[in-house]
Image (tube, rainbow, N blue to C red):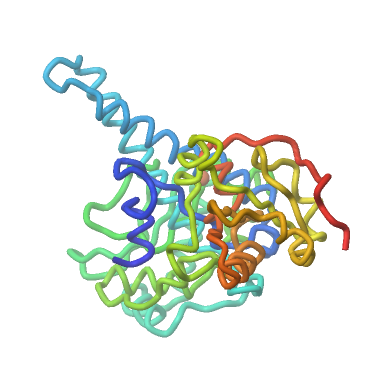
Length: 354
Ligand SMILES: [Fe+2]
């Protein structure tokens, strides 16, 4: 099972019926003229909201007496389930399709990898012709809402640009490999009503490496590309990571068995922070020699940073080498927000200015 599949099928950490939130792979503070405020709000409120709605709907469905439920309830819940699931999946394709590489922000001039470029050429005449059609379709949705999706259709034997009026609109059997969100919440904070400017800017932030990997998976040739779908710098081993859902469950434990929460933040990132998990100790990564002595050895330590990239990943690797049961929170406090996790105002009293 690939990493992408394991996130999707929720087998790793949470109850099997729970659809888990996926982490942001893009670095929201380093995008090419798409603001962190816009991207994080979209991820937490709209994507996270869809995940929460889907799980709540599935819980209601699990408790439904199918033989006795009134048809309006059966219809309503199944409709909501489809809409929320479509929203979750399309938002994941959307966010995965954006971002730079490793520590590098998007350049704005990246081209599709050779294999996908050839497929676009085969099915649209040229990459430019595909681009012209895709962006025209997106701009035609301005003032309305919906998605423009590049999908692989096995039945049609080609890539298609698909119009979607809502989250539940899809070409049957086709696999989305790139999705552009044309709901107003995807651009209004940065672009106001100027949807065409947003379309051009989103296209200048595409991560063609991940889109190419999705294409290979769609045609059944994807292999060994898991690291592309893990936040840059996150620990490679599954046992060194913990999901927001699993952390939520473990914090409900008796105090003695709860994980110790370590909030790490680079000094330059402090202005980006407003809140923290209740009971966490906040420190600078560079002050490790001072804070490491406070860490317990008899219970897990969950380390989190803003999005779960190198700050928590590097610390977890270091702590595990020293024998601590340390795990990085996948997606950081941003994923925690997306699952509706509670927080308290930021307490910097333990933070060492080094
Ligand atoms: Fe959206």
